[in-house]
Image (cartoon, rainbow, N blue to C red; front, side, top):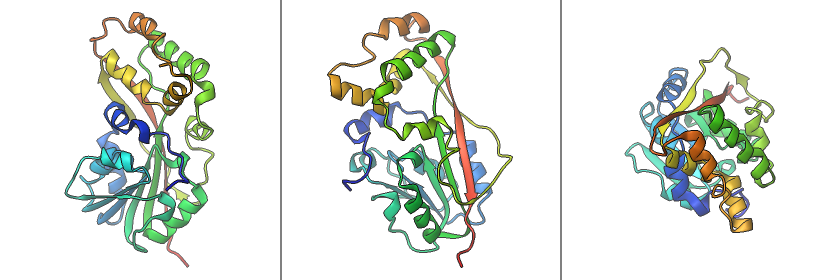
Length: 253
């Protein structure tokens, strides 16, 4: 497991509690476009957010992630089985999966090798869905501070793979026949300022900066965030656009 890009194991509990959840309508739509609903594979499942959501629509869900610490934060579910393994070396049986789901993780994969694994485990006509979210929006004042933190303060601490998220996965390796005319989804959370700042601190770049400098990059910015947000206990709507690509895997041979 030493060869995977591990940016979250050291703060797995924080990550699990601070990240937004995906809309239920996304998983219902994916299930609607699958021919069967026996098994879904949540590759790079992290703390199992998408795994549990998929279990509402599939009889069995297999969640895999190379981080044992992330898997340890995943909630138990009678339909979900978790495994500590890389996505490129999945242990699922050949031609056994109806949906392969990759939530906020495709940019960490060796994508050519992963797509080879997808072809092996997918049933003919199965779907591969890769999706991510990038910049959140609250209001003009908060968003300006967000951009300053993202670019000016943390810019050099973002891993190189982050650019794939910034471009909405449009330039990644994706050798499957794509579905088009899909609905548009957003992630939405009603958060207080402490909840919002906890999300910002869960970023890989924020944690890398803290490890490198010994300083919390948000500490100096907190008064400005309070001024922009207002009373810290005030609940505000935080919105992230969701980027999604869905491909159908053809029968082999």
